[in-house]
Amino acid sequence: MRDYFAQLHRLDTVAYRIRIANRADCKEAVAPQIGLIAATPQSLPRKFRSFSAEALGLRWVRATVVSVVEGSPAALAGIVNNDELMTINNEVVPVTGTSGWIDNTLYKNGEKTVRVVFKRDGEDHTVDVMPVTGCRIPVYLEVNADPNAFTDYTKIVIQTGILRIARTDDQLATIVGHELAHVNMGHYQKKFMNTTGAQFGGALIDGGFLLGGVYTGRSFTDYLGRIGSRRFSVEFEREADYVGAYYAKRAGYSIAGAEAIWEAMAMEHPNSLTSATSHPISPVRFLQMRKTAEEIADKQARNLPLDPELKTREVDTTPKREDVH
Image (cartoon, rainbow, N blue to C red; front, side, top):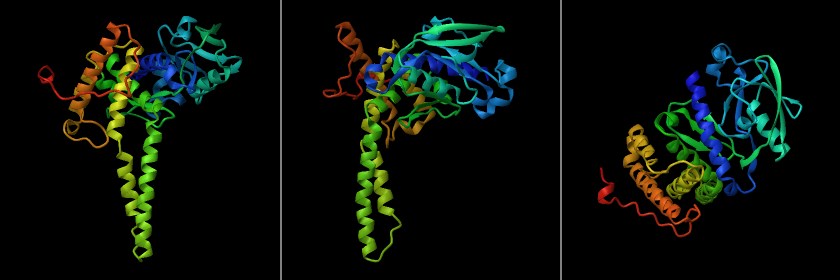
């Protein structure tokens, strides 16, 4: 249980810093943030609810702060773990849907100061918190041993298996950056267009067979739709790896050595060493991350902006002698 909250705090810290550092790339999808997570037993994963109150002192009737990012507005205002949130801008903090409610309240409030009332050791405290602006998309931790991360473009989900194999926050930052890059670069919309276009072609074939008296059961529609959904997928993933590395670096994380996450991923999924359908094979991702780190280091040495070279980029992932282990 305590491991879960340690993982939650670790992810929250990395995600907060990446969202703040890369807000310019999120365009209109930005929102004020204060850098804390509060929870009640009923807002936790079901497996933790029955004993969370006793084990961690969470209250069923009031949200308890379980993560405060160091240096965040909440931390600077003096809010710490185990403080019990009572109101934000005179509105009672709910015990269900707490995180979403806080996010929406901050969004509606804009960049203005928010007044937070909390209870600590039986005494009420009132502080004013000045939010900072960052990418609005929430980042959630899902209890799942499989090392995976994904986005549906309304949220980013990092499974606990990722935190297990990401030995450093630098490695974790490249994963969070990767998913944010998918969102900002519109890969979902492009994938959707590829899928629907292919399905349309398949529907025409199914329709032709139907006119001939043969019912195909949407076989061509479904098959070509699957093909279309994978079109450019490998390229999208490589692009997200590349841009995500820049996102992590902008947030202050080191990219040098972060490629080790792909070695760890290959150990978990050996097929990724030689087989690529929707994602690049692990060795290619390893080499691209290393070369991206070199590219970023060169820009820093020359005092150039840390902007990805998306239009002119040609990443050579051919192994050189020094790359072979």
